[in-house]
Length: 109
Image 1 (spheres, helix red, strand yellow):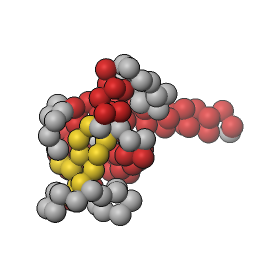
Image 2: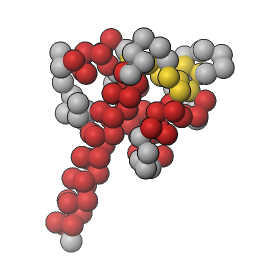
Image 3: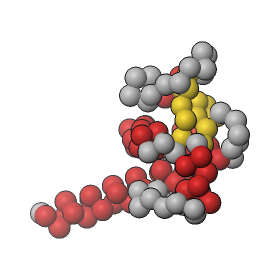
Image 4: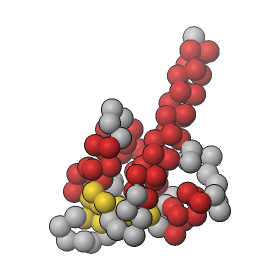
């Protein structure tokens, strides 16, 4: 039973790393502009919403992305506002992680 649980945890961790990298790369397409998180989620296809939100939350807390409300352009936190109402762009740290200047074991680029 422990082996099965460890196996499932390893799969979940791998998906988390992959999703984090996918979110960053998709936001990077419009690098200097904000992009709607809803559009990023759509492009990522079948990624479950909970996994997508987990990735956005991690990337935001790690200061790899900046978030703001679409309508008011006010800074926002994914913990307080639904992702459908937010847009994101890469921060300086987000650009550095994609170009390999810094590394993070939780982000697969």
